[in-house]
View 1: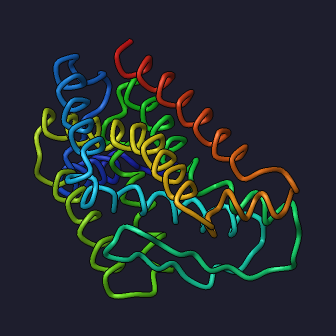
View 2: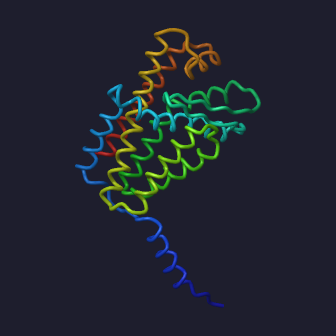
View 3: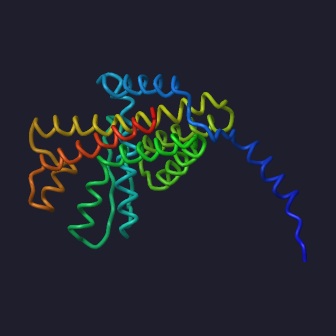
Length: 243
């Protein structure tokens, strides 16, 4: 028995083109990569802009906690994102030093690891795939966000990316994907610097201190480990984007 699939394939392709504007097969032009890197730098470095742009880092940070907790078999109670760029992830499961350590470690490393993965995709020309994965990740996070501000923040961010996927041209999609990638790569070290400053001001209940309690090693050591890991991701991601 033969089954004709030509019409179905054609219809599916047409539907895809209607739903999203696919940009694939070529890395973003060098000038877009450089320009969006400078814009991301301006969004991350100054404290004035970081007060607002830092919400994107918080989304990735808390999403990292939630994802690792879920993968380790924990029940993710919820994620809360607050207007001051702080966040909270609640999870429940059998107490374990190893799992507790891994969940704590996931937050400050998540933005840089996600940025490195996005840089690898962009260097291979997968612009639309990078944006689609961002939407999928935001949709998954939406399911566990428990406060109104967090819901609005996640929906607004996902909406911006969906709008680009549906109606933006190749240049705009490339610019958005590159900006988000640069932002994640740069925000990782930036957030660790904030953590270092916070701990210097006095007692802290940060992820690094939770890891110190679990391992018996100084919290400052874990801050340095975060800084090293995120810096390496930034260097490698920069090589991928510019290479």
